[in-house]
Length: 282
Ligand code: GLN
Image (cartoon, rainbow, N blue to C red; front, side):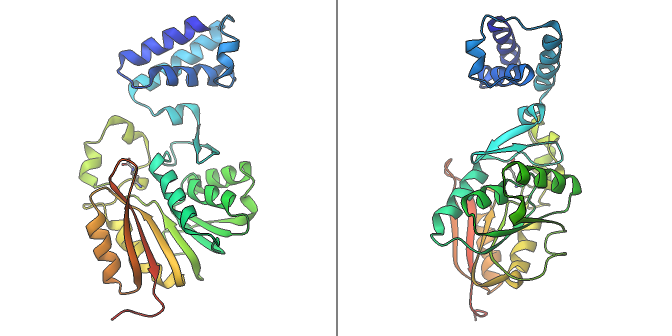
């Protein structure tokens, strides 16, 4: 098997993959149905021809540019195991940071949370695990995404506290929440067209934010005051060049105070937070 690992690493490196060794280990471990650390204990064992064929098929697809997470069919997000298919966006480390940012702000967890465009369920599931008393509504316009998110919620033991709703943003939602959170599509259409190959494997609806990347953000910002209790907060993931526009959109509603833009670990403006004011600001 150590031979196989070396060979796979070499293949991946040829198509100039960073972290070729790590990816090789993940692919081989996946086909052999072992944990990655077990590969070394079994280093002398041989890979069967059938296993080799399966490994080759994945390596080939990876070299074509298909994201590793879709090949493996899972990813880890904030300590949660999430099954993934091309029906949902691959959760990014930035979104783990969004979860961290939110968790750090609440010593008293909010009772009712709305997650817009839940995709794989990542944000709701991670927050639900951290906040055992909170209830969640997680919406998506994709029925495939909702089915997968529900499966992930079951796997992570939080399904009874997350209601999954098929909805075009707020359209099927009623009631008020203490926290509204979203990682909406915020990439400019024009950027998406010339984006790296890997991005083309992900659902366009989860990435394409229109000409300025602001279509979904503007809609969410405009409508969220209706769905937030006074004092409730809106948290958004945003594009690195959208801080000013998002701040302006939030101000224009005259419904928010404490508007803040935060940077991610890479130093880019990436998150927005605003609190629903008690009454309309003049
Ligand atoms: N951060 C993602 C990317 O640039 C975009 C995610 C999104 O649009 N919500 O690939």
